[in-house]
Image (tube, rainbow, N blue to C red; front, side, top):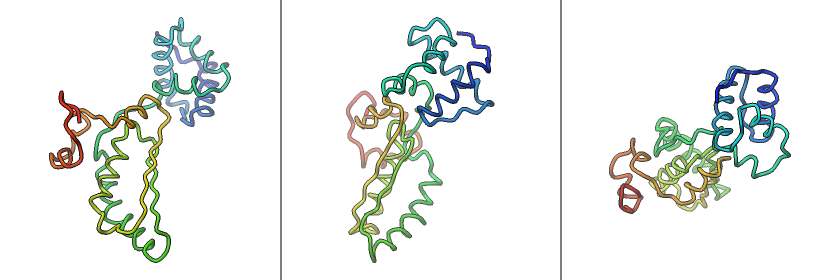
Length: 186
């Protein structure tokens, strides 16, 4: 589908996407929004971008509606240890500081991986904390991972990954924490 950037359609579409999915598409990103809905329109059987956009704007809120378009509007690209600098700061500064504070009071440590995609970042965090288990002894630790893309969440729940997910980690990471399943899957 070829899409001309029609402000009369894109403005209410952008507003509805923000309202229903919590994803903001400001004017400068309307071309991205239009491309996503163009792809969705083809796959969902609409004649053109405008028909797909009108369907989304006018259809009552439902989980099914959000799930149908979430896959087109989100970026599912991720891999283990993706944000190395952030993970190093978490390991070196944040978690030790929290653990020290918790030792004298609260014994729980709750972490939330927002926009976890297919789970690699949340599992990276879990592995990082496992490697810090001596520092964290006595703490009840949990990690909650969330995303709006149901396909990505399904993959995260399965916990089966291919070599591409391990592209930036040393061999010990994969061999210590994952079981080979054959055909390059772990």
